Length: 362
Image 1 (cartoon, rainbow, N blue to C red):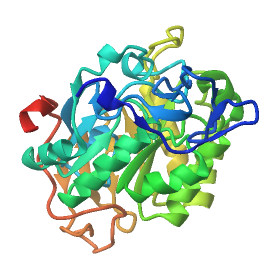
Image 2 (tube, rainbow, N blue to C red):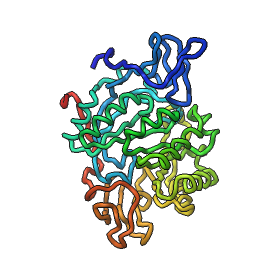
Image 3 (cartoon, rainbow, N blue to C red):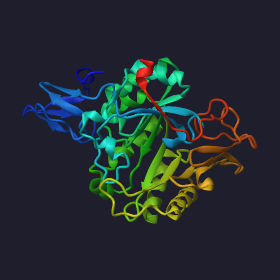
Image 4 (cartoon, one colour):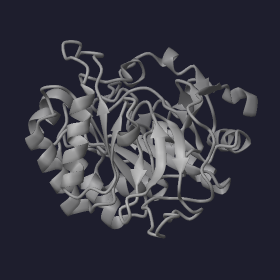
């Protein structure tokens, strides 16, 4: 796909009185003069319209385990065709995918695929779903929606891995086409969001409440715990109590380990004990499915029946090591349902990662 073909009209913007164009996709509300780009890098003003400059272009495609997203309750053990583009609408100092999300180089987007090609590749590769990941799909909404529509026609699910930083109107359109999401709740203080991500907490909480109460999208939450920034017992207490009150006990919550990266090389790696403590607080506060991630922790990575305590899904990192669920997601011991999306026996993809060349499916 050539560069010209990757530029398409963008939705969600309006003209201001001073003749700038304001992007209304996310709460940044970038105001652009001709030739300027938004903070996300991929939405820009060209002449009298806003455009998306990365339609159909990607930093690469690979097949992952769905547990890597992480999603523990959505077609467990299945494979997912994963891809991202470039740019991001947050500016997290700790970004773990900064080479893509912070990229300003179109050369990063060396691969390309039309939506129909992506859907066909997923089907032929035996993937149950396609994931928009590595950078935030909100910023390439037009492409993500077209891919999701093409996938739905092929019986392929769509998964958004996102920070949830999006405005109300585009939020409705975006999630109409998603089957599952993992939302990064990066912290539970406005101080952290303002200082560390350059964003705000409230819009993310609004997205989480919208997903729970106004959609049928299966979603799970991830919080990357950074020593000294968002890992205090008080903050985890407040966050898990909010989740229980506003979203209910059945939304899975993943506490994952930070490693020094990007502009936060001065912080140590998260101790496993911090993750375990956070999980214990979540369980104490009534969260049914709390997990530790980015560490080897069989107990913290496994799923247990909320009725009888049976280990329903044993895990070691991304590998399923045990399975005590019926095909429709009920405990084999007591018959109690496990929250999630289950369709048949567990998949057998394991921890493999397979790089894919989409031109082979064009």
